[in-house]
Length: 155
Image (cartoon, rainbow, N blue to C red; front, top):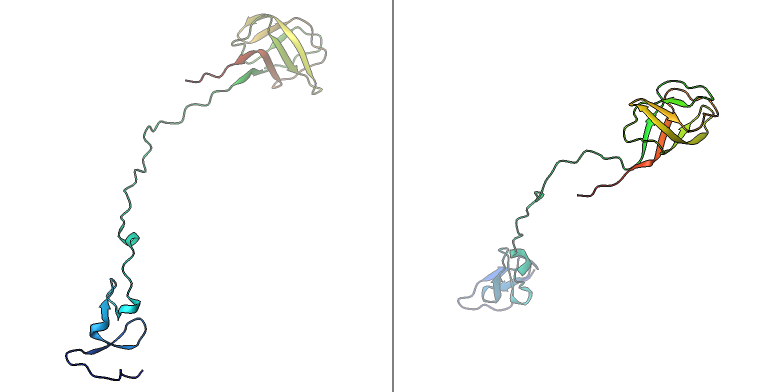
């Protein structure tokens, strides 16, 4: 790079940090990053560089533990002992919230469901059916009470 053509008294020469050209010190300005540049390419610092972010509050305002799951829908239980076809007594795991007149479905050994009404709730583990079972049912088969439906309770 050649030196500028003339000498100026009291003005020294320097090299522009961005372009590499030789310029007079009187035509140079110092940028925000410390670079000495010609006035024609001088850039001020962008105002967004000086903005400070607000401190975030990462915590949850009303933290609570997850509630226990509540089942919503028909009441279900299982058969506790094998029951022969023609029987009106059905041993179940629980008769809680079941009452006479409720419509239930019993899964039979064939895979079919038998819809029947409860004639009586004998105790906490036995139901008396209004009509006899058409097929046998074995232990572990599901019994669904469609009348005793657990409703959603929204606090």
